[in-house]
Image 1 (spheres, rainbow, N blue to C red):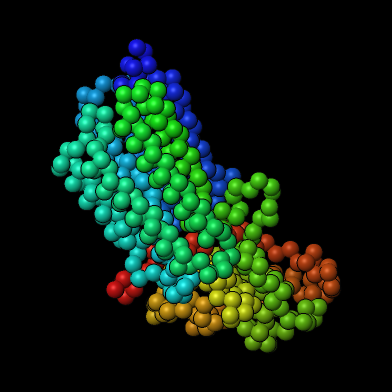
Image 2 (cartoon, rainbow, N blue to C red; image 1 turned 90 degrees about the horizontal axis):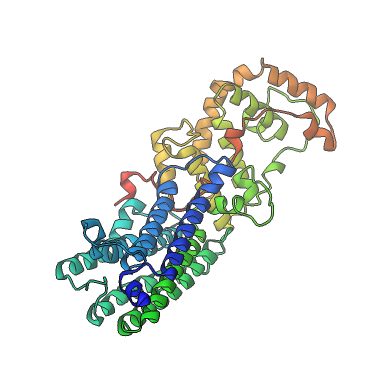
Length: 457
């Protein structure tokens, strides 16, 4: 009799066990998302690099809570509007739960396709395409709301279950199809592997939900089966949201430096993360004295001079141009046919220096900025040439004149007289500001808030 009562109204021991597992998975989800920023002291990214993961967290929360509420895991009286079956079992579990999670993944694959296959920024911004992808879910939920097919246990008949499962399946198929379209790309990080894991998880979850629902619907007279099926449904939902979010490919570099089973290398620059030999970009005459009569662009090729000049520029709070120059040099070290790594580096430079309002926005003309942001080929070897020339002129006009009379130049001359061979790095101790050289995972290939109106057409 006790089993029959809790099977009908909720509150069985297994139900509360399922609720406990759901609460634990929610805590782990929040901890997983916040850990890199708390432990590694990373700055919170802007734009879609921030809100796309947040949307996935909210969708996971909606899906988890909606399952708990809609299958009677908690014994409560349904008297308030917020306890409505249509709110939990239709809207939060559908459009703003499973549908939103799959839509985020589809948008991510769409962006990956344009950036790494088409080699250009996506033509539609993420905050526009995501609602468009989600529209069929919203329309389906609106139809169910109007027709009112749910019974008092928040279940639908087979007539409504079939189209609902078809909608779930269509999005999984779209997800699989788009992922297959980029499977030939040799990604530097684990984007493709993560996406395929997402495909497997979403497919398995969909199959499991269908089986669990059918068992609960057809054998509603078998009390233990009803209790067991909803426990497994809640358990699988908890596993699903944790695994689905953990395999997020929205921030590749962040995933590389955050949650490691073993302590891995700490990347100090995007060039280092991509394996670019940028620190070897220098002339062969490092032990010789610096001749201030030589052209500045030639002097900047010398690593000793560049480090000294960069430290001086940072002390004047004007080091963005020199940092930009160094990272463009690193980009130039990549072979022209290595389009994937070139795109990673180009996107990092764009987000860090070119996008209006970026942390280290450089002072270039609006026309040059537009040309870079509207580029049809992010892997083009001359992508930043015009910007580089403009910044070199500014450096020559402003910083260069003051540098030759600064203590940094004097220190460089002294170090050049003492240093040789492997002692060079020890002799040079320039205090380059960490905030200017540390990579804050701004390589997100899905971040596109910088798109100008001409790109949205």
